Length: 248
Image 1 (cartoon, rainbow, N blue to C red):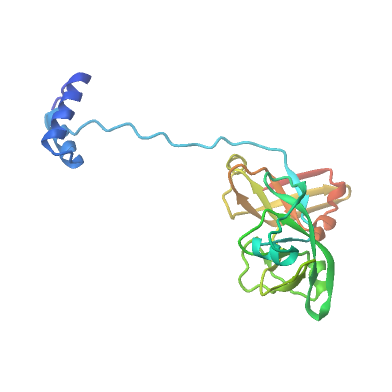
Image 2: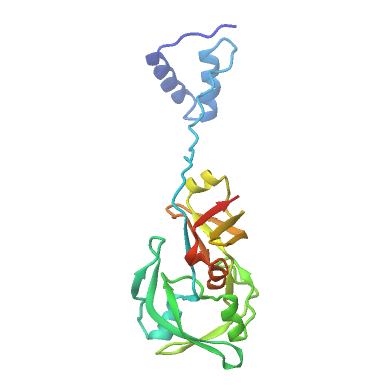
């Protein structure tokens, strides 16, 4: 069984002829090419398309304390601050495109317990969400579950009071699960996938702590950054940390 050597010009002429004869049918052209280019042998297998690979990268690890804060919808911003109101930037956060706003609101929990000034983070979202530490929740008389951001089913609500109005959230109060943001290159370096769990080891003088269940959140154009809440940051004495590492 031998294959025929065919020049490029001959191939192009045969393909044009086959297209005319088969009325452009891809199946018909494929069958005819097999018959025309070989003596009963299968047509040559085309080279596979190149597979996109991600080059591993070790970035500088940043660990940030995520204090109590609120994410709002556009509609809730207008209710709290007036028709047509928009969030205004106080300072940029570590992740590109995210910022702490100048605007704050009062947060009221059950039995009228309150936090007088809670910072809003931008940009706005599709659903409003309040993120508290365990200590905050106790002081407000709220029992929020530990959740990934945006997972708001079966969460308690609260009341937000702004200079122009009041918003009563039926749900949306959580204790944010500690997590690490990273891009595909950092994920390849650590050998982890989105939603997997890692560990964070913190050495602070005589205090060395390993935090388990650090949720991995992977996205394009994301910098390597761990988020802990205020209670967690204080517990590991993050301010005086001498060594921090992520462990799979």
